[in-house]
Image 1 (cartoon, helix red, strand yellow):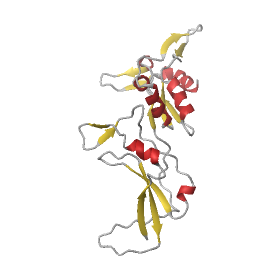
Image 2 (cartoon, one colour; image 1 turned 45 degrees about the vertical axis):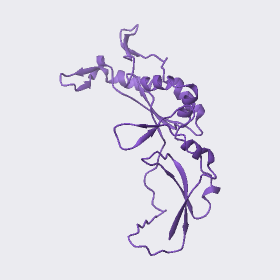
Image 3 (cartoon, one colour; image 1 turned 120 degrees about the horizontal axis):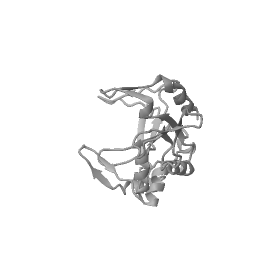
Length: 221
């Protein structure tokens, strides 16, 4: 089988034009990063069924030199070429391996503060590409607040209070409204608060037995 490749800048003029606008920044590594700003982010235009009609496959090219998600189409044919030292791939479409759930990141206080420091246009581009995220239950990682706080109810039992005015929630809702699809959210507690734990001098800790039920109730709430 013969495979030929074409770069789809005719059908993806906007994507290729944006790729040329990459604002390169080099760190202490071999490759560069393209800075997401008000006019550029590494975006992927949706692929339609019509564009994949026939013996074709879509793939995207990113390189050390700075090409980012540049679309290209592979065209398959039954022609056989005898090329020395060629690389051959065997594809079994009946075998399924990993499934990508999405692309995103943790929405913490620090992440939300950094997002809010961007221009409105840059925020729109960044949040529109997220379709998966992690949200920690308090207490949580990278937070400005030590929550949940310990209080005592009228009956004298310990209760957990948490501040619902989180800086990250508005950005989660914005990502949900800007995304072309559903935004998948995962949540878990980063850690129980210190007053619920036995903290050892070596840094290890465990939940105190008397707080098992309270911690479980907090999860359910």
